[in-house]
Amino acid sequence: MTGAGTAARTLDPVQELHDAPLAPLTTLRIGGPAARLVTATTDDEVVAVVRAADAAGEPLLVLGGGSNLVIGDAGFPGTVLRIATKGFDLDGTRLTLAAGEVWTEAVDRAVLEHGLSGIEFLAGIPGSAGATPVQNVGAYGQEVADTVTEVVAYDRRAGETVTVPAADCGFAYRHSRFKADPDRYVVLRVTFALNDADGASGPVRYTETARALGVAEGERADLRAARETVLKLRAGKGMVLDPEDHDSWSAGSFFTNPILTEAEHAAFLARVAERLGPDVQPPAYPAGEGRVKTSAAWLIDKAGFTKGYGAGPARLSGKHTLALTNRGAATAADLLALAREVRDGVHAAFGVTLVNEPVMVGVEL
Image: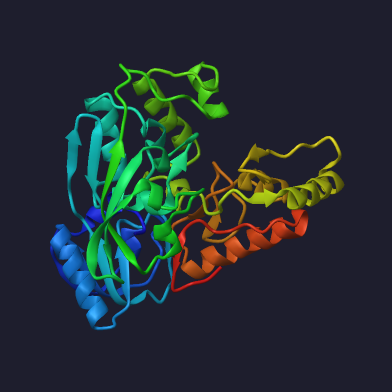
């Protein structure tokens, strides 16, 4: 599943359209039409559409709202299934969300109406609930793998609905078994184990957030203040959807933060010293035994691609170098040309190859 957002509401539920524009259903506002677009509002409808497409041997694209998606200018030659299911079911601190629930709204309800922590640092992320386990969505020191207990999905290979416990989801940095095998599973529901901490957030694990909240890393903060602080930080980077702000016409972070082996990290540090001087220390975070994670945004900036870089309709965000944006009339070709320029420039400067985070449909980086 590719995500959801406010743009997905431009269609009424339960309908079928042909030669349907897809660009308005993505946060990038980029992409050609779908041969057929079907909107499903129940799990049964979702499964029926998937089964019919599979039986006919027809290409299928499952769409929430396109918040983590780049669709090619030629569009999609088969059926696009837009999941618009609803369901916010709370049993104590156990929250089950239908795949089509808008993630930002679900977080707000959990925090503001029910005082539950566990996903408060994921406020403001555009996307559907069903997309969150696919990408193992994360930000500001929190990721859904921390709280997901199970995922209910339709297994296209087995032809049946299955329940996948968290231990079998294969969660890793921006990764899961669902992302690893994208043509097999269609997420229907996700269950989270949240916490009632009497108005306190989860531990603050991100330096920028801790500084903004005025607490030490590892401490807890006021739950509502944590949500509000994250929203302000994201908005300052153009990472909160705003139809009037072209810096938010993006797919979010376009590249994942590179994870390097010790040997790769040593070679990288040598390139940094050669290019920027021996006293420059790039960001480095533990990423498992023998591995180090560094910052894609730092790499992009230090390679010479600063905020607002670009002269055409696709440019880097004026607020954050990690977002590639549509300034109003960009095509997928424009966006990918910029992405390749940035990727190749970073590799030439530092020997590190950036990997795209958004799902690519009909295009390749």
